[in-house]
Amino acid sequence: MAADKSNKKIARRDFINNTFRFSLVVGLGGLGGILSKNTLGTEMVWQLDASKCVQCGRCATDCVLTPSAVKLIHVYDMCGYCDLCGGYFRPEAKNRSTAAENQLCPTSAIERVFIEEPFFEYHIDKDLCIGCAKCMKGCGSFGNGSLQIQVNHDLCVNCNECSIARVCPSDAYVRVPANDPYLLKGFKGDGKKI
Amino acid sequence: MKFKQMKPKYILIPSVILLLVVLLFMAKDLFFTSEPDTKNPYEYDLTKFKEIDPDMVCYEEVMQLKPKTDYLYGISTDANYNLYVAGSGNILIYDVSGDLINTINVNDNAYCITVSETGQIYMGMADHVEIWNTDGEQLQSWNSMGEAAIFTSIAVNGNSVYVADAGNKVVYHYNQDGELQNKIGEKDTENGKLGFIIPSPYFDLLIGRDDELWIVNPGIHQFESYRSNGEMISSWKRTSMQLDGFSGCCNPSHIAMLSDGSFVTSEKGIERVKIHEPTGEFKCVVATPDQFIAGTTDLDLAVDSKDRIYVSDPKKGVVKVYDKVDGK
Image (cartoon, rainbow over all chains, first blue to last red; front, side):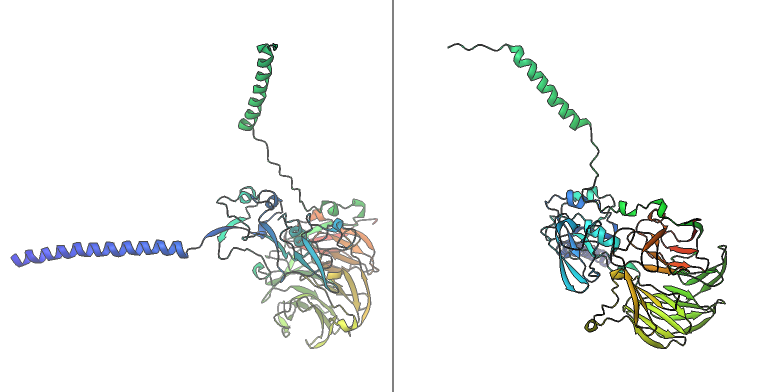
């Protein structure tokens, strides 16, 4: 009987010790998990899904920054290097000269450079671009859609509640991981071969 | 020196008025919300380019077919007024009254289709050609033209089969055994040949009335005719945002030919179907932009021997049949 009692006491002590050890391991594990999540976890930022964009102009007018942090990106892989570029020329352009009256961009942020007959390359001056997406609509209507607006994360201040997302009529603004913050659409993602 | 003292009412009355004005402004801000200005100062507006004078329209829609398939890739007609629709993994055959008479299941999607005088169905399957009969039997399957190939149009003329490859920007001339005879329209800058300018996969061809091959060079809005050996015969181009021409990177996207040699054309960007004279002058409109959902592309065309025009509309999932308006 005495031996049994002694065994029970040891078992209780062991139980308490094990409980403390278990709590310590769980506590340290949890702390490590939280710390690693904070250190390695992905910060989320705002981005515009260009495939949903309806070119309402709000990206240009509603950003807290002036000019907007939304800028045009040219996906050169998709570009047709067109002479009559729908993203560069106004639909009612009188001719294909670079005169301001022929340009679609309200700030002349697109530069047209001759490559070889009949190809032209289009460069974006991001300091002039206001993110109005007018060229994106023109390129998408008549061309391949290689001109795409995106939130430029060199400029964006990543507001908790993005003022453009709040008014975007097509819910095109989404949260994306900061380490992969661009949502450019291309041929590969469209299901069709081109 | 003694100042004349202002009477209190001269101060009191303006102050009360001022206070009321301030209160009114505050009340407006607090209790009334004005609609936000939704007008887009940067709007890209094509409305006026899509407006067409009804007097310009020379065809009217007489029938609409709704093929049971996920996507309409291409259409063609045969000598018996049957319509062939290349859908998702199948070919649907309709008779002249619009009744489905046969469905052929194929191994993959046919991006383009044509029917020979002998009734064999020629299909461009992205990178190779397949020939089937109307009983649903595959007769031939030719070699692939590689990963980059995207076959967008096919035409048969006697022993020759012509295939437009938008990926490699060239037209292949095969014989009926699938042997490549020659390539047509290759870029040769040393000899001043620009080649085909194809920014997106819209590259159509057809056989003309004199057995010449007509190919669209969509990047420069040009129609080019060739002999089977690749020698160019003639060309015409119309670059314009107006109704009389073509605009954008790759128009016309599809073509067909009427019995008088006129060209039927469809476009992307401004969704419309028009007719141009054999020399290129604009003639009239078949289908106006308001008949399509904005952004519709892939408006494939076919013409039967009665000059009825068939237009496939993949966005609505229908094939529209147009006939001439009397007197136009």
